[in-house]
Structures are given as structure tokens and as C-alpha cells.
Amino acid sequence: MKRLTFLLSTVAIIAATTTQAQFPVFPSADRVLGQPDFTSGATALTQSGMNFPAGVAVDPVSGKVFVSITGQSRILRFASSAAVANGADAEAVIGQTDYTTATSGTTATTLNVPYGIDVDRLGRLWVADLANNRVLMYEDAANLPEFGAAADLVLGQPNFVTSSIGTSQTKFSGPSGVFIDAADNLWVAEYGNHRVVKFANVSSLTNGAAAAVVLGQPDFVTSTIGTSSVNMKGPAAVLVDGANRLWVAEPDNSRVLRFDGATGLGNGAAANGVLGQPDFTTGTAGSTPVKMGQPSALAVDRYGALYIIDFNNSRVLYHKNPGSKANGATPDGVIGQPDLATVTTGLSAEKLNQPYGGLDFDAAGNLWISDYNNNRAIRFPGDFTTPAPTVTGKPPKTVQVGKLSLKGNATDPSGIAQVRYRVGKGPFKTALGTTTWKLAAKLKPGKNTIEIVAVDSFGNVSAAKKVKVKRQ
Image (cartoon, rainbow, N blue to C red; front, top):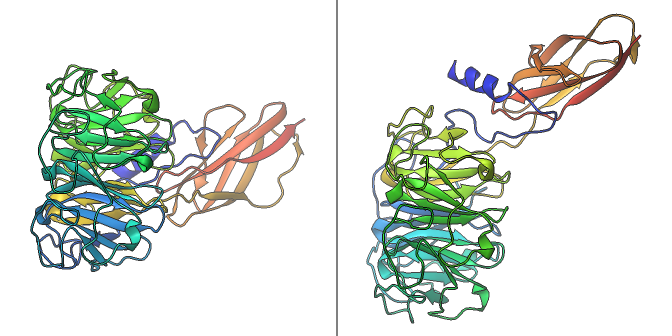
């Protein structure tokens, strides 16, 4: 009943254009890494095992999947998202000399509690090496050797063997999130300095280069905690979407901030919007549909919808058209829970157990999540296939009656939930049947346009099939 109610609500007012709803209610994952199946959650120091995975990134060039594992100070690289099997062994490890070692270190070939990761459009792997207070970059990450790969660039430290904390243009304190935008800017969320910094033109930077912009603080030498439109408290993740909006996840303020015009922001700029809180001065955690409990990761799908890991509530929330949402808006859907009111943990293909900093889409639109306390990374398949309604026979161009009866078919791999129709700009009505349907449209005198749309079980709405008829 919940599924049907959701579908009815999503198509209550349907525009005569194609829309997409990427995931159904309470979706099931179809891939798992770090575990042999969806009901196992043990830690393991092996070629496939994990202990608190906190980041996941998919290479947009090769499709290979990277998972950062905080409890083992390593990053595992797996085969492409399209080819990888459940429980697969990694094909390479970064930060360790083999698959059974988990020592931390401060060199070009070692890590110390890596958190957020990102693979950019050039195939470079960026790593927030949190306990080393630095960000590392690895060129051509898909082809790094199985063991012992060395980083090519370090930021936040002057060299690869220094790990001191600092608050300046060249030093970090607990970097936890990284993102490369389309303009070749690196954005870093610094949990310990309560700020986000931008490095411009990263392809030209050398070790220890200075940041260009700071947000959450008025300057590069201040690190005060705050809950306002210009202050932050423990930011953990950062992202710039296709509309040049900067999004910042703040676990300690239980909110996500929106900054419009990301590439043009100056030091200390104010946020333009907030999700998870009703205003900029509230920072309390919650488990209601409109509240969050330590949001820690962000991703955007191909349609611009914003996805947010809600750590303490063991769920991923998503907002369609997030740039137009009012402060504290209700999400459009949830993954990991059956509805927005449930916040239980679980170990299954549908449930999560406090996922943390890993969230990314692959080229096919599948969503990868690092399920922190289940010691795994899982993939939820997206559906971008729109249903296809057809009309049986050739409808008449003119009629003398007040109603026109039509029938036809509709197909979709995930099944048809509804076929709906309207005459002109009138309200949509439900036809009888689904894969085989029929309707009787009431016509007005003169020209009429009947629009017919099909809705699949994911909520995807087809383009309108139009039938034009004149009532004499």
C-alpha cells in the first residue's frame, strides 16, 4: 500500500514531458563489496575485506570502483562497476604493501585514516588523508600498480613526510572531504578547522600550494565554531553541482548548506540555503523527515537531484531540484529505509548501518554507498528507462460523439504502475489497465488533444503520446 500511495502522489499532477524517478520505494542493492553477500558484515583484512569504509568513488573514465577504508588505512581498487561481482577481490591496494597489512604512515606511499575520496574527469584520485592532515593526488588511478603506488601531489603539507596540524592557506586540520569541479578547482572540507577551502587550477599546483578561497571563516587564520550562514561546525563533505552550486555537509550542525555561484565566491561568503534545519542558526540533530543526524556525504545524479548520507539515521535522503528548495524542505525520497519516518539500522540488501562519507554515481546511474558499520560498499541500481505507451489501431481524426474510446499497450522492464491521460490542459485521469489499457476521453466541440502517459514501478513517467481529434 505504501508503494502504491507513493506512485499515486508522484503522478497526481503530471507535466506533459518526460520525468525520472531513479529509485523505487525501499530499493534493494544489487552489488556488494567487502562481504560475500548482503547478510554478512564482519571485518576482514584480506584482498576483499573492509573495516569501516568511509569513502567510495567511481572513476568516470574507466568505471573502476575505489573504496577508502579508515580502519585499515588503505584504499582498495576494484574492477569496473559494470563488471565487478559480489564479494570480489580488489585488483590493487593503495597505502599498503600487500592485502594483509594495515599500518599507517606519513610518506608518499602510505596513508593514515583516509576518508573522503574523489576521482575526477581526468582519472586522478584525490584522497582526504585525515590523520595526516593532507590531501593526496594520484595520477592515472585506474592503472596504478597493485601495491606501493606513490602519490604525485600533496596539499596541506610542504612534503610527503610532514603531517602537522595548521590553520593557514597551506595547512589543514582534519580534511575529510574532497571534490574536483568542472573548472579544475579542488574543494576541501576541513572538519578540524570548521571550514571549506578552494584550490584553483589544481592541474598547475605543486606540493604545499596555497588555497585561494575560504568559506566558513572570515580568513585563513581563524577556525572558530559557528552555526550561521557564514560559519560552520565540522564540515565533512563538499560538492559542486552542474548549476555551479556548492553544497557542504556539516555533521556537527546536522545540516547541508547551499552556496550559489560557487566559482565566484569570495572569502567568508554567506550560504544561500540550508537543508536539514529550518534556518541558519539552528543546528540540532533529528530523525524526522525534515531533520538530519550528522549528514556526511553528497552526490548529484544526472538530473541534478542531490543525495545526502544521513549517518545517524542510517539512510540516504534525496532532493529533486534542490536549488529551488526552501530552507528545511522535506526530501523527495529515501534509500535505506522504507519511508522518511523510519530510522532503524539493518544488514540486508535494503538496509544500512550508519553509512558515512562515501556516495557516488557510476556512468550507468547506479548509486554506490560506503556502508560504514556494515563494513561494505553496496550498489543500488538506477532506472532511467521510460515506459512506452502505444495506441492500438489508427484513431479517427474527426468524430461526432462526445467521447472517444482508445486502447493500447505500455511496456517497461520494471513494470507499468499506471496509464494516465488528459484532454487539453485538463486534469490527468487514470485509464483502466496497465500493460494493456483502455480509456474513454470526454471531448469538447472543436479540436481536442488527448495526452497519454505511462508510469513505471520506479515512478518514471513517459513522454506523452498525443492523439488529435476534432469533434464536429
